[in-house]
Image (cartoon, rainbow, N blue to C red; front, side, top):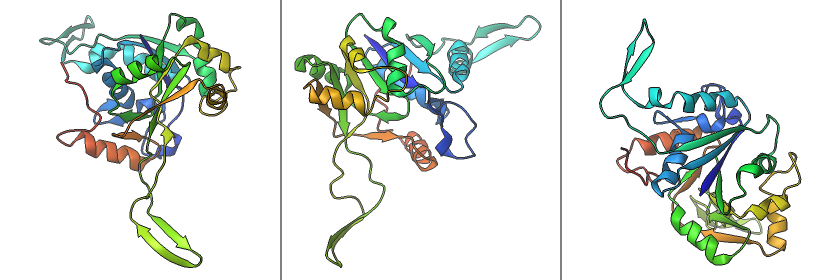
Length: 258
């Protein structure tokens, strides 16, 4: 089963300390955010990826082209340029199609441009800016049991601000964290090829119009995830994930490196 990762956006909101580049290439603990996302899918046996690039997509192409060099200890014979991997290389069983889907294409349009690669059956998709410990195998089983065109993973957004409860001009309750954060679309979706009937072109974002139409047609299921989920929308988010990655048990790390 193929996994689509939308990786065309820029990390502009992360501040001047982060070099310009695609948001999924933001460094978390010495690895691109994209690597973290792909490693989770791979832990569940999903190793065929289609990465939709846009803004500075060449950085992502070069990352995969130089993957062995970056991920392993090597000996380089400078005169000849020969590169030898030391010992047993750390390898991934990934196959990766990197597809340029345009600099200004919206998220739905990026997916639409991949249609020729995704006609074989059920496929998965996520955005390249969030990590989670969602059970991806259970997500696929749930999607198949529902028999719908699309399934999204519903998550509770991480709390950012405290919450006040008011009655008139009086505060009746104060909480350091929101009392009822509700549900949002956390990505980590499963689709049938019929999803392309809901996307009209490059100008369509995936998060609004197609989702509304799917919901109206009764073709959008929600897999509820109560565990960890975090997007990288600010430098604050990046720093938090860096700290978690340095901890003994990063909450989204569901794999063992080989």
